[in-house]
Length: 200
Image (cartoon, rainbow, N blue to C red):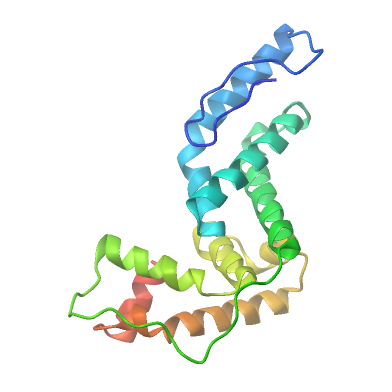
């Protein structure tokens, strides 16, 4: 079995213990490696948006790639691999934060807002946006990523997360309201303009 680096998409060689590489396995490995190399940037972006951390994103993507590689021969419709991988990443991410001990606590005091009159265009706005998303509870952040980055519908999000459609709708509404009210996102800008760039 080849190991594929999550960041580069390159195969790092080697076969699983006791396996004799056959023509079919070589073809499967070549297909899988080609798939990962072609889509690694998009897959990594999804992992990063779910976790908000570069290293956690790499670990999440590597775990999802490993799971997908093991199931590669059973996936008859290769056009559905992207959805399979993203769902695997989402499920792995949810499982990880359910196991993790809560170490973030709500506080009465908000962090200091940046000074100056910068209009926060481009990269800086994206940075501030991801910081605002990171302040959301993980379930709410996951729902926003699935809705606005992955383009999923409420029933799809409910199915992926194993919750009701009503819970999805109300959680997304609360998350967006919280982002609209975020002082850092709207600093020096009209509220509607700031939020418009968020969901664009």
